[in-house]
Amino acid sequence: MDIVKPKVSPRFNHLILLGGAMVVVIVLMAVAMMQPSGSQKLERSSLLSAVVQRGNLQVSVEGYGILRSDKQTLITALTPATVAEVLLRSGAEVKADSIILRLDNPELLQEVKVANVALTQEQANLRRLKLSNQRELLAEQAVLAELTATLKSVQLRSEAEKGLAGGAVSMLAYKTTLLEQEQMQERVNLHTQRIAQLKEVMREALIIQQEQINQANTHYQNMQQRADRLLVRAGIEGVLQRMPVELGQSVIAGQELALVGSDKDLKALIRVPQSRAEQLKVGQAATINTRREQVAGLLTRITPEVREGTIEVEIAFTEGVPTSARPELNVDAKIFTAQIEDALFIERPVNVQNYSHQAIFRLAENNKSAQLQELSFGAEAGKYIQITKGANENERFILSDTTRLHDVKTIQIVD
View 1 (tube, rainbow, N blue to C red):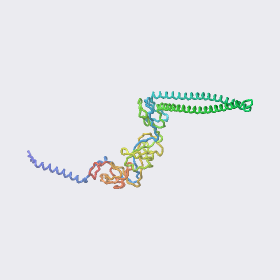
View 2: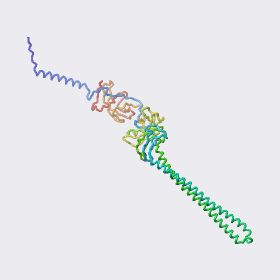
View 3: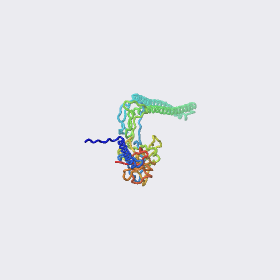
């Protein structure tokens, strides 16, 4: 027997759909009411947190820089030349007489030869002058000897005639002999003075000639020194830090050829933020990280010049230069500026600065939610920062960046 099904009116279907929608809305409203106001869910794996600790906090300033020798030698070209041979490269260990480069300058080598010839000629002129002076002096001394002999002969005759004057020898003859003796004595005296003056003239001539030789020798030594510098030597024991020239390159006088630094007296040149400069004082302890070891140091110099928001400080090794240290090695450094006793501190949250106030999410004891908490921060010590207000020991705070959570005071943490 056929059963006739009653038809459902379209109005009844509309009521059913409307009722279902109302149920969904009521459920959503109930869920929303169960959530705290201003709350948002975050996955636990996306958050980084840390616990507030209590203890002595070593305040430090961190920076970066390089190791540089306190004793450096900058080698420059004395004359224009061409790089003929490159024997060592940057980073090579060198002795004082190690040859780094060989330069070539044919014109300079020719000038050395010309200067050497000029020096030899001046030295020959000195020998010639000495011989000429000696010959002239001997001639004048021979004349003086002849005059002296004549004077003695006249003196003997005068003495012989003295007792015979007015008798066997007339007075006229005796007086004539006396006059001749006076004249010969005068000639001897004059010639003696002439020889003395001649010796003085000869001495001055030798001095002048020696000055000519000295000038020629200075010029020759200067040229020879320039020629010797065509073989570029290190000059000190250490490391070849920089060599900005290449094979075949032409260089001019004064151009840098190489920089050599000693590896025995290295110091760290560290750049630190300008904002932390007021915390630094000469004599503060420090550590230098060479990437292979941590070495103790001491702050020895603070430069006042600011460059790109940083200042440069100098740190000396206090326990000797480590074996891993080399000139121009990139290093990090930490300078210890103070120690705060019995301080509350935590690993520095993202975007938090020292001596600032900022709201950070504090985790509940069940670690399933976090509430926004206003904190006051103090000094920074490496990866830690002091908390001066707003937190207690063993409380856990979220370190991750939560600046995207605008107007959210509570977060729900889900696994």
